[in-house]
Image: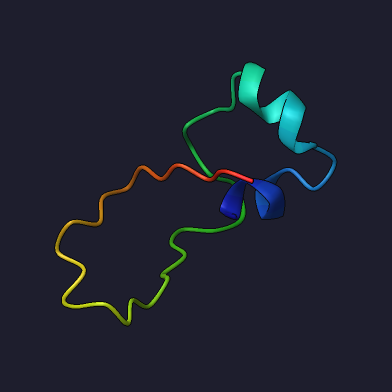
Length: 50
C-alpha cells in the first residue's frame, strides 16, 4: 500500500514489472494491525492478490 502513496501515478499492472527504488521518499513505516494472533510471521515483504 505504501507503494501507491509513494508513487500515486503508478498502476498495479505497471508496478508488477517496473523497478521501484528501495528508499522511500514520503513514508518511513506503514503498520497494519493484525487480529489473528501475534503476527510473528509478518515480514517486510507482502503479496497482494486480486
